[in-house]
Image (tube, rainbow, N blue to C red):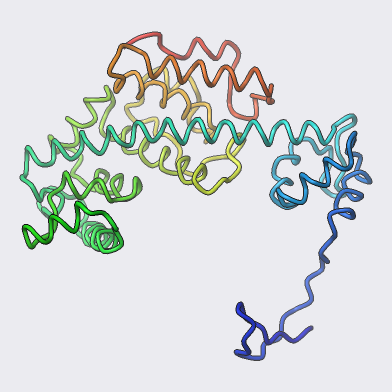
Length: 316
């Protein structure tokens, strides 16, 4: 046991007893020695030390786990090098950058389509209407979220609206300050048979229930990207639904929670929102192919199948 009386900022707050933690902090040099002792080949120790200094040993451990032969005790597979770990890490950075930008294009489209059909069917403040929702408890939570995010919004158009109209902004304004997750929850809580929900999904040639799962799935991916989390071989918790899923989606095995089905769906969505035939979807597929060729990751870990490009439609 040890005593702790420190809190962030250095001021004394309270005396607490903390159990001894079994792992002691290691210097960057000792971290590298530990990796070498576990069988990792390091060709340039100075470069490896710089990488450890700026990337955090624990963060990197998520990238080398697939290259371990055993975890108790930790041993790397024969011939694995630090350069391979860097290569996978940099691939993940490129994949996150690609998906963050691409999901952003769909997010802007969805906000526009959703707000349009809400307003046309139920008026300027359709997002406040209780008669179109499935759960009134969730509706109450959604309204609280809207108010919180409106208060935090430092946008001139919000201030202008309140000064001019003296009330909360209409749905086409509100959706522009809400997080993607908050907008997704608004859509999810609309009654399943409501025409608004079906028309929004129809814009993307998807079923309403399947689109719900797409929104949750892409929202999770977007959050991972925004917080610089490991994405390439992550098992996503928000899996794509198989209910009314397009046949091509079913063939990508969405139940695994791997990233490949999400890549396929992203390509499909870009096919629907591109102002010029296939321009966005083709650019996405080209960029994806480029980074896969550049870094050559073990794509099976991501759910890729043989002849994976055959899953991607060539047109609308």
